[in-house]
Amino acid sequence: MKVLSTVLILSLVTSSFMWVNIGLYEFLNFESIKAIGRFIDEFFPPNLEKTFLTSVAIALYETLAMSILGTFFATIFGLTIAYMIVENKKSVLDKFQSSIFRGLLNILRSIPEVVWAAILIISAGLGPFTGCLAIIIHTTGVLGRLFTDAFENCTPISSRTLRVNGCSFFQGFIYGKFFQLTPQIISYVLYRWENNIRVASILGIVGAGGLGQLLTFNLGLFLMDKAATVIIATMILIVIVDGLSSTIRRSLN
Amino acid sequence: MKGKRMFVSLTKNHMVDRNLIIGLVLIVLFVPLFPASEFYPWRLFDDRNFDITLKFLSSFYPPKVDVEFLSIIFFGSLQTIAIATVGLVFALIIGVPASLLITNVLSFSKIEQEKTSFTGFVRYAIRLVLIMLRSIPEIVWALIFVRVVGLGPMAGILAIGLTYGGMLGKVYAEILESAAGIKHIQGMQIGYSRFQILAYVLIPQSSLEMISYTVYRWECAIRSTVIMGFVGAGGLGFQLESSLKMLQGGEVLTILIAFVVLVWLADQFSSLIRRSVR
Image (tube, rainbow over all chains, first blue to last red; front, side):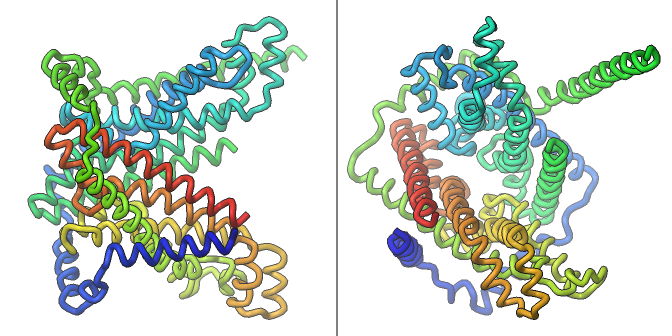
């Protein structure tokens, strides 16, 4: 088994190198390194004009808003779907219906946000709303799956006890399962939020608002100093959100 | 006794007030997010928008399945896999040395608890570079590299290599550090060299975890290569973008199916590898 997988990996790697056929020489000769140097040089110094910084700040806020709203609604939808399809003797949907929902979640999950955004642009138009929708759709798939797994793996004793003593299915679910798993759910949501802030800052590449839109616009006009400012703003936003979310997660444990 | 009860009730009221205030603050912060992201769902149901959406959606079926188009999709998928794999090899070239350099447990100056040292400074600088590499999203790297090395797979490979190199470097270092323990301290005391400690203590204990993380990252690389094509860096996304621009619903559906199949295959492959190393 180990030999087989080693052979598989090695053949994958060699055939990939052959397939993409990269000329390392073309890339690593003196001329092209100088060209890269010149290119990097154009990025500095980043543009720090006040008017431009204001528009970067607006795009930053837009990105943040997209990621928060997207994660928020996806959490609600994901919880609702998980509640409906979680395996139980008296679950809301029967086996067949819940397998349809599972398949749906799989599809939502395996198509990336950028692709959703590119499709949705046609009906929702350019702008951050499309980005929001794309994040909601993809994240619902991811969180729905994670929540369902979590609810199914947690011990059923407390919810069953509540049911035996006359609680409704909903009450059993909320008090027996949901509150038991709240820390886990919050950490899943935060983990997705960390991911979504990255996504929200690039969705603009297909026209869905936020920092990415500003970046593609300026790169398209070869305004490298402005692009540099946007990239730095993206980095700062991502680092701050990562730090914030890991602080919250640590304080939960 | 009475005093204690009063104290409890006071703190209780206090708690309620605090929760109320936090809730209000959160709501006040939350509401402006809607206009900021132009969250107006009713726009979807404008007459004009709705018609276009319906027309586009109805053009999805049937998916386009003629041989010529399918072969384009097939080679696009192969290219996606190749870009992700080569990119990950580049990421390993960056990540492995970086992780060895920044691992605290392999550093004598750290163990002797010197506060300031030259090597400490170097480690700090490398950590900073890794943070920079991984906190710029890969598609932004791709956007930049497309302008340096031109359209094509090379930009995608470099983008994956840099971003994932930053991630692998950090995570490998964390895994190695979590493997350090009593054996490793003993080894240091006996006078093992750093290489010996790495080869005989740290790697044997953490190789499984490292392999499975690498395979997981490969899977992620496939997902992100798929979208790299939107900026012209090769792979399936390139085809998808042109089909979307032409409003060719049938082509879009075929490509989406190819996406799902590709991601599923990558999933299967990586779980096979993970099972075989267990």
